[in-house]
Image (cartoon, rainbow, N blue to C red):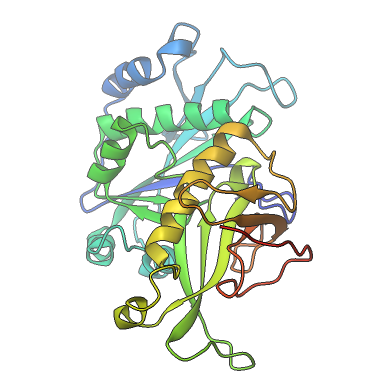
Length: 306
């Protein structure tokens, strides 16, 4: 993945489709599926052309404005190395709360297809993602796979859940992952009964938007929550991040430092642009829920009210 700077923007999106059995593409069926899922540009498509070897195919999106050296945006499908190493997917496997059987499935896979875009990074991010996911859906409808790995979000996905999400217009289910990390900070341990965590999104920055992160204290056990019902939990922070990521995707990077957001509850969340605490290195909007729950640091100091 070519990365231009510390923003986290990625010039080439990549998704790997993993298979237990060797996939065989029926090119006629794939063309039909491309016409079905990319109807807006189907009449102007040049179709599939061999590129470099007989198993690599490029789909030219000629209805889009040329973006680089008079080249049109392209989707490329190519074979994955036959031997798939589990080490390649360790980052994704650490964040598979949404798919408990991910590791077992990935270990059973030996084959794959790689789907990428080329010359598309200069397109508006919504156009770019729409084109890419349309091509991906066409390929999945032609050769269904056993697991999906979205490189830019480091997310392993169960194919049935991906289809379900798209059918419910949850189009960021694959491109963006919501992650949870425990923080061990011996220099400033949390108060008894609490633990320090970071929750973030991974994938928005790849499209040219800031990702989101929240560094906060939460209960170390369910019993601690009983006398403190106002305490943050990973579940309600996840709900907030989910609302925020669709808001940022829809509106763009319009949130200003120091701005207060209230989307899920009545809590005042203060926003500030920062670099990410957790790799990959990228721009994020840091979300501060206010003292005493916030475990991070922002330069701006505001009074919080609920």
